[in-house]
Each structure stands twice: as structure tokens, then as C-alpha cells.
Amino acid sequence: MAVIRPRPPVVTAPDLPDDLVPVDAARHGDFLAARIECTGETDLSHSSLEQCRVGGTAARVDLFGATLLDVEMTELRSPVLSLRDTTIRRLRIIGCRIGTLDLSDARVAELEIRASRIDYLTVGGARVEDALIAGTAFQALDLPQATLTRIRFDDCRVDEVDSRGMSAQDLDLRGLDALSYLDVNALRGATLTTRQVELLAPTFAASVGIDVRDKP
Image (cartoon, rainbow, N blue to C red; front, side, top):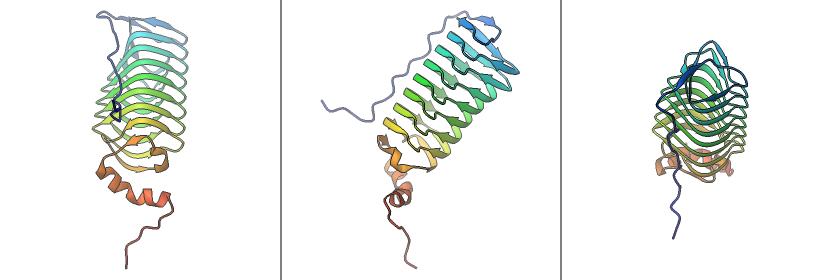
């Protein structure tokens, strides 16, 4: 039987208990079934979060090197959300307003982002499998050296995509309204609509050395 491409992401909701215990954020913390309200400079680096909900308003939220399993971030407001070098299994980000979301060098399985505004999303060097991003606006997406598998965008828009060095399989870009891609050669393994390809035609031509210009 022929495989239908692109294969959709397999994304399930985080498994959260009905009752979550409010706790204070702490570096190197071990949190289970907790509700964490971020304020000020919230440092959760190298922590373990399992079956947790994260929200609040903070100047910065740092989860560098953390492990996240079944975590939901709801209506979080922060100029910076750092998830650098994290290990993630089932993370949902919904209704959030984030300046910079940094997933550099992260290892991600099952990511869902919905109804959010993220000015700058970077997944440089990250390995991401099974992600659904819907109803979200970006100013820039940075994907350099990322490995992306079964990723789908629905009703999203972005000004610029830095795709240099990206490796993709089953990357569905049909629901991403992007003004430009810095490296169209890296789009191998991605799916675009006919209209998207028409708009990118001059860039595709330039990438193979074709000089496109109308007659005077």
C-alpha cells in the first residue's frame, strides 16, 4: 500500500490530573502534578516537570536543560521562554504571548502550539518529531540545522523563515503563510501548495542559477 504524504503528526493532549498543587518555581526542582505561576525572573532550569500546568506573567522563564513530560502552558506572557537543550514529551502551548521561544538543541516529541503569538521561534539544532502548530502568528522562524519529522502548520503566518541547513521529512507547510525562505534548497521533504510554489518561483529559479527578468 502506498504511503500518503505528508504523514500527519501524531499529537495527543498532555495527561493532566484534575487537581494540581500550586508550587513555587525553583531551579533543579522536581515537580509532579503541579501548577506553576511564573513571575519576575522565573528559573526552572535543569528541573523535571511531569503532569504540570505553567502560566503567569514573567520577565523571563528559563527551562534550560529541563525535562518536560505531559506539560501544558496556558496564557503564559513573557518576553523570553527558554527551552534550550530540553527533553520534551507532550508539550502543549496554548493562548500564550511570547517574545522569543528558544528551542535550540532540544529533543522534542509531540509538541502542540495553538492560538498564540510568538515573535521569534528558534529550533536551531533541535530534533523535533510530531508537532502541530495552529492559529499562531510569528515574525520569524529560525530552523537552521534542525531535524524536523511530521510537522504541520495550520492557519499560521510568518514574515521570514531561516531554513538554512534544515533537514525535513513530512513537513507540511501548506498552512503557513510565509513571505520568504532564506534557503529554498533546504525545503526538500516539505509540502507546499501550488500557489506557494508560484510565489516562490523567482527564489527557486535563482537558487539554480536562473536569471529571471521581464523584457523591457
